[in-house]
Structure formats: C-alpha cells, structure tokens
Amino acid sequence: MTGASSTLPPAPPPVRVLVVDDEPLTAEAHGAYVSRLDGFALAGVVHDGRSALDRLRQPGVDLVLLDLTLPDIHGIQVCRALRAAGSTVDVVAVTAVRDVSAVRSAVSLGIVQYLIKPFTFATFAERLAGYLAFRRGLDQGEGQVTQTEVDASLATLRTTAAPSLAKGIAPETLAAVIEAVRSRGGAWSAGEVASAVAVSRVTARRYLEHLADAGQVDRVPRYGAPGRPEHEYRWR
Image (tube, rainbow, N blue to C red):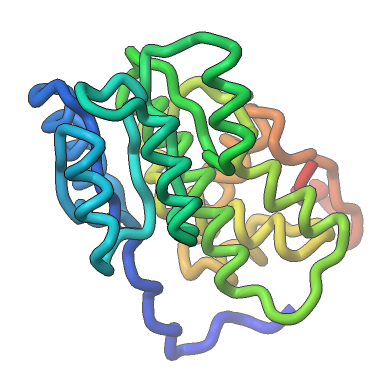
C-alpha cells in the first residue's frame, strides 16, 4: 500500500445540524453537544414543529435532532410533513418517548437514529460518529454498491456495542477510521490506517483497539516478517 500523499485532500464540509426541542435548557445542551463535535456545525435551535418546518424550507440543514413531544405538532408528524414535501434531510429522533408504535413510525419514515433521553455526551458523540461515518461513506461513493458495502454502511448507524467513547477518542477521527476500515472490505494494519487517515500509527492503533473492544472490527495476527506478528483489523 502506498504512503499518504504529501498534499491532503480538503476536509469535507461539516454536517449542519438543526436542534428541535421544546425545553430551552435541553435544546441549549444539545446545541452545545453538537458544537463540541468535529465534523458538525450547529445550524440553529427551534422549539416547536412549525418553526422547524419553516426553517427546513430554507437551505443549510443536513441533519435534524428532533424531539417527538413538541407543543404544537408531534415530531412524527413533522417528519411526515418533511417527507411529503420531498425533503430528504436526515433525522435523528432525540426523545423520551419509548412507545413501540413511535419507534415503528420513526423507522418507517427513515429516521436514521432513535436516541432515548436521558443520555450522556459520550453516548451522543458515539451515535453521531456512526452517523458521520455512514454519511461520509455514501458521499464518497460512486456508481453502484455491493451488498457488503450496503450492509457495512447500515452497520455504522446501528452499532450500539460501545456505550461511550473512551478518553482520548474523538468522534471525527473515529468516523474517519471507521470509514477507512469499512470501505476497504479487507484487513488493515495500524500503519495502513495511519497512512489513509493521516494520523500517527500509535493513534491509529488506539482507535482500532477501541473498535475491536467494542466488537465492531475483528483483530487477527498478520504473519510475514520474522518476529512478533502485527495485528490487522477487519470490519465485522
């Protein structure tokens, strides 16, 4: 595998996030969470369904963090209105609603994540890192995809093995490592991932070990040169 180019490609634009929650303190907290994550930018905060729909008629939003219990329109109805209007904006339900019917409706409307309150920042960051890897993987794809690629993309959204991010694990870098390992379809060494993601080998190994501990990648020894075998990592 060739080394990384001396000229790195430009960083992709951040995912612009609209927070929709009727509780001002909760909305403010979730907005602050978004602002702490690399790869994301806060596009605005609104507190009811009609304001959300008005804002989403304008450009500049890629992802909606949508509470379901809004004072004027139920969040599921907001999402139905978006889909009826032809909007393909991604939606993450951020709610205390645990009803099976609500979850089924959310799935049928293409809501990509269902995050139940209350949750920690670490859980929030882990879920959005998975979403970012999913989005970046699709943005970089061209033409047709294989079944394996589709399964791997969806797996980044559904993974719940790790309840929180370990200390020193940044969501943006985690998303880049996930994308690299997932898109290859084979096995990577820490050095190869380091070259692909433009981080040090030590950093790449730390993130790969985090994914292995979470059950997202398989860790197997790679035998070749004499001496201690190097581990390689394959998306599970």
